[in-house]
Length: 425
Image (cartoon, rainbow, N blue to C red; front, side, top):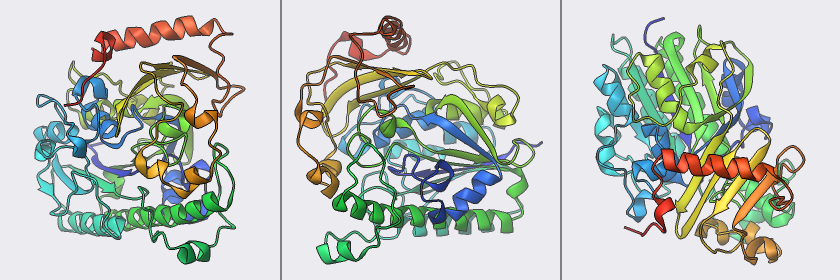
């Protein structure tokens, strides 16, 4: 097989809230179809529950504390200027590179793209119908660039499902008019009227993303390039709700990863190997035949896509330093355990303002889950406590080994948090 074209579709704040992961299958026919023709990773995680931070790992193959993206780009944080980005590496290797939609990293890092939409967002904003605009321009680019000999890398960022959700006006009459009968509320949230209305709005955002995916896939097919194009759909972190976005619990760091490349991966396949978005860049570089480089901290899972082996990764690591506030936490997650280390005294849940001000959060009981003192260490047995509610740190010897793994990872990746608090730039 010749070097594949690559399309990377990334959605804002979506987590795994799509049909292939059992959530509202009727809302995402395009993503359902993509999954049936390719591969779904059931345990794919991001390095951070923050937008810019997570995306920084995706396009550098390095952890946020190593590449400099400790917080959000529109709040002043930026990648180190010596970072090599995925689009730049691909462009240097002979790929045509294009970006449409939201990027959410500093402007200097756009240099890896030969084509950039004039409406590209490097900061947070919420234009109406963003998925429609981004996908339409990406589809037009595919049609205009069909038939060229050089392979391409197309990066499309959907605003959705960031708040405010599609059609959400805050008007109680509008909220009440939505059909909430078919929504699915995760078990870590209250199943009440406020949350169900919010998930009805979220459903509209997810549907908008799916329509964007469908438009791009149709344009790819029409261009005659589908057979040699790797299509990936993923998200930057979990849903914008309490105990998800901004936390290192699974709902904050687990995201969808759906991939299709005819001839490389078997159709309708699912894998439960642990993978991380820090692994995506080395995976794509390997498939493109481009040297990965020694600075990359992720590990390629190209063989997993090929169906040859189960990935040998036994744990994933994630972190948070800043979102809107300083909240330094690190974690290691294995197949059965999650160990979280909190490096500052903070309330039990520190939420982004959009989550904190949401109708769902306002409807929740203000108890120790919110305002209690956060423990220095947390340990959860994921085989019996998938909701990560029962901290067994004082009752399990497993913590010793996991604590050691986390500290070793921090040392090996040069985490400055080991030396003390990280100041805001």
